[in-house]
Picture: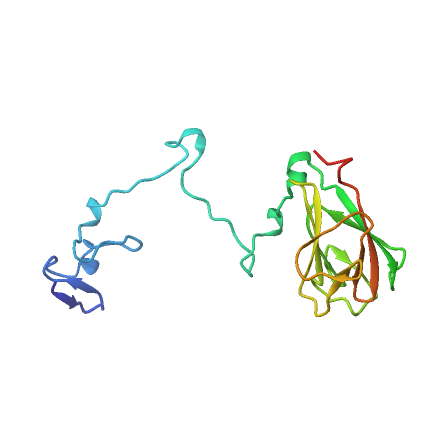
Length: 200
């Protein structure tokens, strides 16, 4: 390959072109990629166009790229849909936590299908007034709709959580009226779904 640079600053292969193909209009145009070792004139490059007139039903087989938020996540319009909601069209309650000791005594919290984060900030289950509970994800309560079972696991909280006074060190199955200690709060677990009922 005999690489030369013309007066306009374009590089070209002098063994293929007698003069700069860009300046003379015979070389590749903007936006068209060519292999450097096997250049061919622009006229010889086949172009496939997909238009509504030559694609059935106006559809195109060109992949569509969806815009993401600035942090790289899908936009709000593309929220994840839970399994029960996908089947039934609703996102029903599957159980409750009821605070029996602590700043939120008497307050109930709905448990939905899937993972429910517990914290004192903007979480699924937000326990206000107990500053010993982590803001984001002190613990997670999980309802498994496939097996109709409930579980709890520790989250990113500094302090442990307890079930019936035993520390939760791994994913632990929950049973009706288990006492959950998180921070300075004590909550009772009340399942709605179980052997007697399940959302279909």
